[in-house]
Length: 462
Ligand SMILES: Cc1cc2nc3c(=O)[nH]c(=O)nc-3n(C[C@H](O)[C@H](O)[C@H](O)COP(=O)(O)OP(=O)(O)OC[C@H]3O[C@@H](n4cnc5c(N)ncnc54)[C@H](O)[C@@H]3O)c2cc1C
Image (cartoon, rainbow, N blue to C red):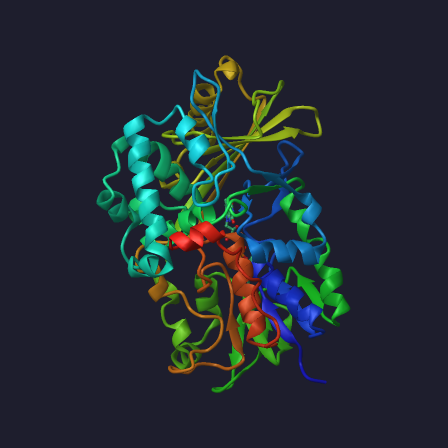
């Protein structure tokens, strides 16, 4: 019997690749060094609070067509709550709301945008000017900005200080996990063109309504149905290479022979699995050490009474970017989750200092919470949460399959959110990379189509 396809890494990229191959009746062995699936998008039992907590709130959008396809295959689509409204804190007033209205895309946000009170008229004028540029640039114009910073685009479109601080920075930092000046303009533009402007479904926000970790429970049965298996708590130590092909994966439980290998680990981990000979044989492996990473901080707060009146809240201009109302926990306490992206300045802080700073922002955003303090908390620092989507990043993101011109190893596929997927570091990017890697083995496996732009948006250039 032909040896199985070995997938190394049980994050979203590895799960996506294994599920598609399992569905295609390919025998897959998925190895994951931890005892649970999900990698950076997962849950754990918190010893302190006794609660199952997500490492961080994970947000998806209507535009995440491949992630949604994976959820569909896992049978967990009903566990996504959809929110077309986004609330922006504007104390002491009630939060402002942005939501798609009746005007066709790309003008669908204009009615609610004009009503926003946290932005002054000159800020709105500047933002509208940049949005119009984004529409007119289209995909070709966006491609020409590759390698430059999104901050440059904001300067070129004469953004006000407030527009940048209150609008562009919170959106870009949350989506790309680096600030506007550190974001490759291609990806900053992608967020707005493809995520907000081109149609009214793409910006609708999805929030998993159950723990992230539980979303992957059906994966094992699907992989087994294709004759494959899941090996948890098994670490890959090296990729065995005979000078031409990968012959297997050396693990801490011995060698697993492989007809093909999909690496779905981070670039630094992959570098450790490859010999010098292998790296020399495949140009995709030559720049693995050049990736830099950006941290995210998630803070779980538990209160004796509810403090939020909206399911979520953006905190424009504050260090804390988002608050999410997670409902009541198992002990009847109100659970609020705070998220700080690009959290470099927070990483060395003590937990008490972190909670103090976040609570300042909570009290600012939710005046009704002033005087209230959490009865329990848990902060989670993810120092290497995502690769940094900095200008020029596409020069080092490798493709899933060997390069037709520069060559490479035929039966080694690369996956992971850091690989070339056209997306910033997101769950959608990870799933796309997994599907692309699976396509390298079974040609019939492909990506799910993007949400098409609305007719008027297309007419205008998007
Ligand atoms: C705090 C935080 C918040 C985020 N928020 C969002 C969000 O709101 N929306 C969004 O779309 N994305 C978000 N992301 C990004 C998203 O989580 C990632 O892009 C995605 O999960 C990456 O998946 P992956 O499979 O590429 O990598 P990973 O999840 O890193 O998976 C790699 C897996 O490989 C395993 N592994 C490593 N080495 C070995 C080895 N030697 N042998 C076997 N297994 C190994 C690891 O244990 C891990 O499970 C967030 C990330 C973080 C950390």
